[in-house]
Image (cartoon, rainbow, N blue to C red):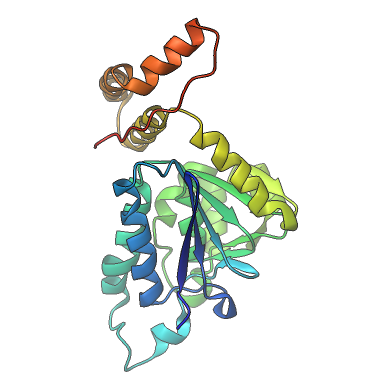
Length: 265
């Protein structure tokens, strides 16, 4: 049996590939569990400094496998229960990854597949990529964090139009709207994502991890509360060996040496 998720380590970067290309990498329960296991294992490996998430073949991820969902004898009896047990756990695990996660969107990202990409820290895309909130055409509610992510990324009106109309948004438009950090020619997507990952991997991991925590807390905090969060996290950052090495390198006019450090939540 072919693995539905393939994780490949290249030095300090981990490439996670959704691997059901014949089904446009649509989610099955097996793929959920495999991806969740890959994400949960990252925190235990201090050698991983960055993660790239992409899809095999011509698509990033087409969302839920509707063949599995439509099977009356299959394991999905309630869509709400399926969300709670699979997608919600997956998005929470993705957001909890302590190192930067890059989504390299290589084709269509539809439904929960689009939500998955947009839940990553940085999104890059092939010029042929498309983002589709496909839920409305099925009579469903956007899930996997889409109703939380899109208003914050696009503003309320573009988010509502994208969700309610269910129209495809091409990569160029997604970039202009701020959903995508960088566009690459299709053949250069993985190379471009890996170059970005290697840049992140050379930066102080402690600061990046703490910055992710600060950004996550900002969505629900007042300014006063967030100032306190920044103070507390900066205290931790200032005590980290990576900051001490970066400061010494700056004062010594040299390149900093890599320091392996995990930041505990």
